Amino acid sequence: MDYFAKAAQILVNFAFVLLISLIVLRVLLQCVRANFYNPVCQFLYKVTNPVLMPMRRLVPPWRNLDLAGVLLAFVLSAIKLYALYALDGRPPGLAGLPLMALADLADFVLMLYFGLILVRVLLSFVKVDHANPVVPLIYQLADPVLRPLRKRLPPVSGLDLSPMIAMLVILLARVLLVGPVLDLGLQLAQGG
Image (cartoon, rainbow, N blue to C red; front, side, top):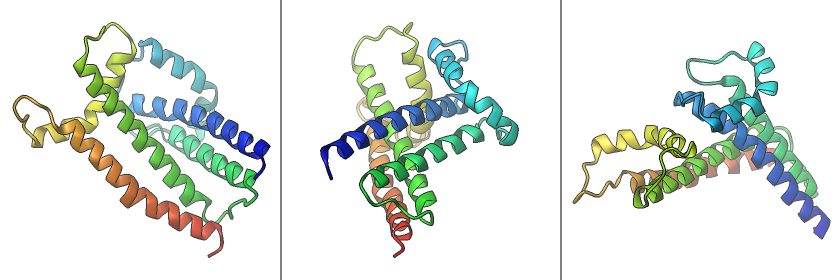
């Protein structure tokens, strides 16, 4: 692969990860019912509304889950994968692309939660300005994952082990769930 193709792959990946991040964060913030008046939420709504509002007419939300946002993130993930493989000179077949996109999106969400939990742990060790609009959002996004573990795992000597267990489960899910789905998608995409 030549250097320009590698540079193009980096740019394509960056652009699509940025777009997918905006959509996924909006979907997750709606799921946890984050404060709409938070400036970060306001920004995400302003940026994503021009695309998601028309899509909502065709794909209505289900409870707190914005299905239009999930569909858009899935489609963006599929386009990203197709573009990356095409730039590598081996465009994937359309048979496996949906599975590859599903695995890629699941991996993205898992790694996003891994990062959120890690940041939440780091915030617990330092003095944080809770007036910062990002801090409550990190807590709101990470708590639905950590809360069930906290109910089952009592603190050991005052130490909350739920973030460590959650991060371990996320890493295992990437290997045991996302990996096989991605491999199956690749096999279907390559016609084998």
